[in-house]
Length: 171
Image 1 (tube, rainbow, N blue to C red):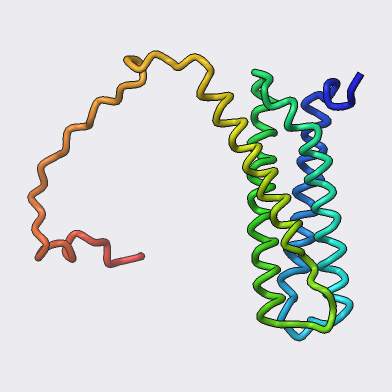
Image 2 (cartoon, one colour; image 1 turned 90 degrees about the vertical axis):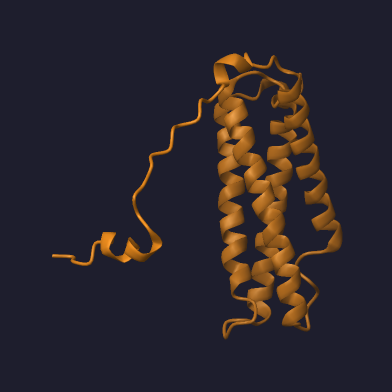
């Protein structure tokens, strides 16, 4: 039996949590680029944190992706958190690329174009799957969702007297 067919919400939660932890480490390391702490050791740290985050995203994607079709609320919730985490990782990757172009170092770039494209592909697949999944589910009755507009109260306030209505004392 495949590994992802046996995934439970607890396993998915752990994988999403690991992605979030690796994302935070990558973000912290990336923030040092262009500062006084920038150097070869920081660039190695950025590269290491980026690779670890990439591996965490790949591992979680292999488990989460097949499970998103399930109608379990817990799996859908963790899937949404994972999509947010992947989106945030993509933003941090692009920020890292821009920072490394702005503050070049004699080392290789920490994030390659292929890595960015791979994460973009994962994110597109996840978003498309969620969109298709929820658009094919039964739609709730729209009559029950109709919102009645609230009646606006007439106001006697004019723009000239707005200042007199503001609280001016903090005592």
